[in-house]
Length: 253
Image 1 (spheres, rainbow, N blue to C red):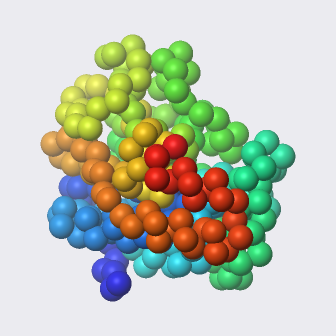
Image 2: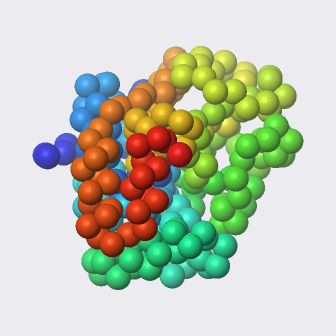
């Protein structure tokens, strides 16, 4: 599938496509990229976890590198290149990490090892897990944690992934998590937005998920895209990865 790179030029763009947690799921990534091509996107930002769980790590890294240089690192990316301790990973995730490390090309290995933890663009902040301590890979689910996180970044919006569950936290809503598909961010408001997962959704919807943010209008929209789940499942099983990693894709969990 031919891909046209999206070149990010500060001050020259309006609409972001924000993708996260691809997890070596090539079918989901290609479906999302196909959808993005019809959405008048000016720039793509990837919030990390390109690899892990799935059977196409090299292909997914290659796709992302073709798309954009605006990429941050996730915990599975770091783990695959030996930069994050996997002792806290569950057994299935550990097996996937070790398998990924073995099959990653040298070029892609070094690429993942050099990715930054955060990106700041004007009044937008991008991180895989949390702004307060990116390398700790903490999860953000509660209003109490969200309110503390608002102190850790500058600007109007912080975009995150990591939990694979799309939700929005706002200061005006006292940090309470909201599951919404469309939001207009006020110029005076502050927001933390989890954009969900391209390749491993965990909110009960098996479709790939990504976000579109119009920086000028402040409009956020989550997009759900169907993909060939069975093809991804077959690849996982053929690679000898844990069957549970394939089975759960059908249920978005």
